[in-house]
Each structure stands twice: as C-alpha cells, then as structure tokens.
Amino acid sequence: MNTPKRERGHKRQHFVPESYLAAWNDPSCPAGYEPYVWVFPRDGGAPRNRPPEKVCVEREIYTIPLPDGGRDLRLEHGLDGLEDSFVRIRKDFIEPRKRLPAVPHVKLVAFVVAMQWRTPAARKHIQDQWEPVLALGNEMIESLRRMTPEERQAAAKVSLPSSGPAMGMDRVKMIVEQPLQTTLPSHLRVITPKLAQMKATVLCAAGAARFITSDNPCAWFDPEAYKRPPMYRGVGLMYDSIEVTMPISPTRCLLISHRHDLWDYVDVEDEVVHRTNARTRAYATAKFIAQGPTSDTRWYEVGCPPE
Image (cartoon, rainbow, N blue to C red; front, side, top):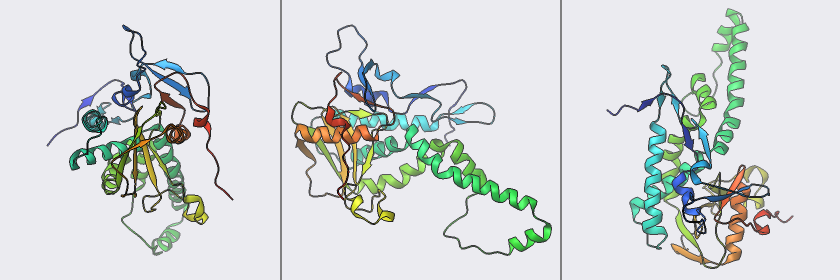
C-alpha cells in the first residue's frame, strides 16, 4: 500500500498550473529574458508582464495537514500527474488537430474538472455552501446541550426523513476548513465520467485574435438559462444548452457541450474569439492572462438577457 509523502515547512502551490500558463508566453520576449505572460486586472487596468511560475500561486492550497505537523502532498502529486498528461495532449493532439483517443480524452476531461475545482474561487463557493450547515449544526448541538434529560429523550424520539447516509459534524467542519482537499477527489470521481460522455470540440482561432485565460479558467455557462423559471435557472449538466469552456492555448479553446453534431475541431473568426474571451474574463476572480500587452473592449462586454 502506498503511503502519502510527508513533508514539513511551507510550499507555494499553483492553483492554475505553470505548465498550462506557459502556452501564453509572449513570443516577442527578448532573447536572454525569462519568458513571461501578461497579467491584467479583471475589471480593467494596465497589465504586468510576469513569469508563469509567479502567477496564480498560493501557499498550501492543496496540502493536507497531519497531526504531527507534517504535510500530506498526495493531492498535489495527483494534480501534477494530470498536468503532465494535459501538456502532452495539448502538444501531441490538440495543437496539430488530431482526433483524441479514448484515454487521452478522459484525461483531458479530468484536467478540466480539476481546473474547475482547484481554485480559490471554488474554495469560496464550497465554503459559502457549507458554512451555514456548520453553523446550524453547532446551534443544534448547543441547543441539545441546554436541554434537560427529559427534553433530550423526547427529541430522540422524533424521526426525520432521510435521503441518504448522515454526515457527521466532524466531516462538515473539515469541508469548511479544507474545502479543496476534501472535495476535489469526489468532484473528479463524479463529474469526469459525465463530461466524458458529452461532446468535446476545440475552437481554433482562424484570424488574428487570440484566446485569453484567467485565474479561474473553466467556465460553466448556459445561454438558455434565463428562459427557464427562476428556480430552474441554475447551471447544470442535465440541461442540453450547457456549455463548459476552457482556453487551451492562445489559438485553442475547449468547448464541452451536448452538441454531438459539432466537429472535433472548428475554425472560428475573431468575433467568436472575442466573445469567448468576454466569458473567460467575466468568470475570472481577480485577473486574466493574455499573450500580449493589449486588451480589447469587447472582452469587458457581458451583455444582458432580453426581457
């Protein structure tokens, strides 16, 4: 049985992989300089050129702390394997526009799922969901503590409907305190096979415009959601109109959808690239990344649904 690697000290970890961002290195970087990408504030402002290794970094974002003060890095090592597979798939299949065999296709989809659920944006989303559950549980525990023995006995006789196995408060507390470490494996296990059944199409920039990426590069968007009743406007894979997009490189962007009539690779004009970039920027948390130092006003247009 493999045991997790244990380390001590603090470590910087990339929540958007350096190897992924390297595709956006500015090709005009002078010889002898460290390669860099251009990092823009999400809502506008002057960009800064930064080496990919210094972009989208946070300390201990995936580390599982151990009781003895050590660090369990099994999650980081698993993500490293996905990143290595992605870089090979991008180079060997996606850039030359070759059809993806089954295994590389699943690995690519798993990388997309990881990119969705490994970021600070995902961490905040998970905590926002579970913190009220933890607060309610603590309130119930405190309420039980104040009860008399007779009241506790009466409360124990109350039978509540259950839709599945119960989750203990220790587990809920762990999710709130370590949301990525506790939920990323289950997201990979559950969502990857669902996305793998959908159609993966690569949009290829055919003009001068180039795709951007961001600190939260995987976007789930449903252009038809506004037409549904309010309580059904959430974004979910059960809806035929769902679109999952993730930039692959400045000239490639992955689109996962239920549109099985689409080709594996589709050339798109500049206007489609700019609209895709507007979505990528809108889903960014704090910054987006481009290959060059100029942006386009169309990237900041989010639009609004009709009445």
